Length: 188
Image (cartoon, rainbow, N blue to C red):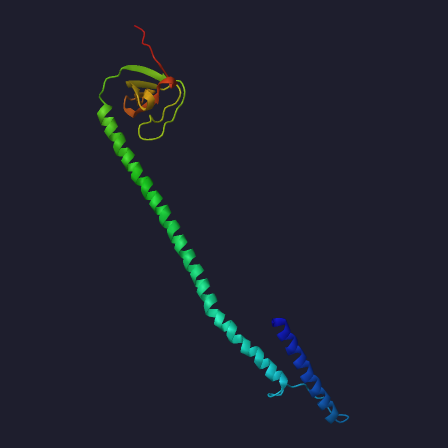
């Protein structure tokens, strides 16, 4: 349809110009300036051009639709960015809350087991870092641990242990796997 319309337009335009050139050259005298090709307001060219201008309202009808689609895309991208920001903020807030809760739990564990007597002394033979609230923290191979309770934790495979620094202050209290430590026998 578009191709046929454009071909028709070109044919009308060339016919119009050829008629004007023919008429202009017949009336022109020798030694005069050659006639210029000017589109007359009521010529077939002008009428053809008018039909092209009539097609413009279709594209202008599409403009609000395209603007609406573009605005919707921008709005959706803005909402998505805001939601990602909210997710990150919520994640940080949850991590802060969990950290506070773990700190409160560890303080309670320290108060409960701080003055309990030691069953035996052991040392770590394999480094094991257990996550969560009950894992014994900052233990390296060769560290001395005070065992407060044996056969605790999941599947009774852990001992509740306490570690101290050089000054005798309690550093951490938590579970440590029994197979990753060995008992220190005191010589009497």
